[in-house]
Length: 291
Image 1 (tube, helix red, strand yellow):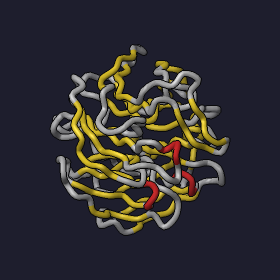
Image 2 (spheres, rainbow, N blue to C red):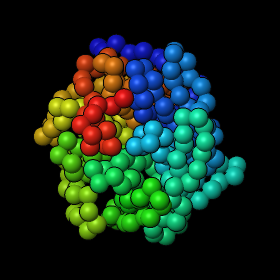
Image 3 (cartoon, helix red, strand yellow):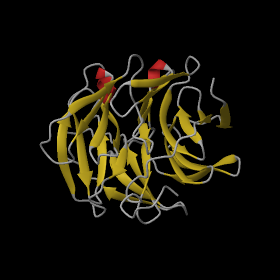
């Protein structure tokens, strides 16, 4: 049994944890329409984004880049829609709380619901857009796209059945959670590339995920109340069960811990996990480690 710590509670659908430093974690709260920060043993509001801040990553300028789905979530209480929804977009949020738009004109038929994002080795910002997931189970074809920080957006792939979490692996290929098939897909980061299956969750539905330096993959199983650890070859290393209704949505490594956002219980938790995080881009480009 791994030791677990409760770091923050009474959160409003937490997602997208980003390690900024020792036990310093930024994360989004979809239903609160904001980015928050856990540090020094407490959580505080960093910025109000409007819409529905769904995922985040750290940029080369020290700001957070946010996938905003426009104002929607699905949870134990049913579907939530923002009182004043906005078109889905990619945003920039400084640690001083300033919010600005990066990309608003996104490819494909609306609605645009950016879900998660990551920087690539080319300096571009890659994101998933599950499209009209208010229409589950008849959701349309989603997308994986990429944008410059100046807002020039390019479609990478049409991807059905709810593209969700996204990250570059140690092989510099692009990994994407396909939630409705319970698979993590892998593909080259170029338009027209065909994805293949890296691994499949035995139960639960893949949401956000992260890698360690050994190439192991840590996947939040969302509605299954589970988190899976996969070996680099896609075989299962470990199953970590969570309480019913917890709904782990995403995770990140650091400080000998695995930080996990739990949307169902509204908590940020930390599990003992002696693994070194795989540095994210752009830090990886500089040969650095996560801050």
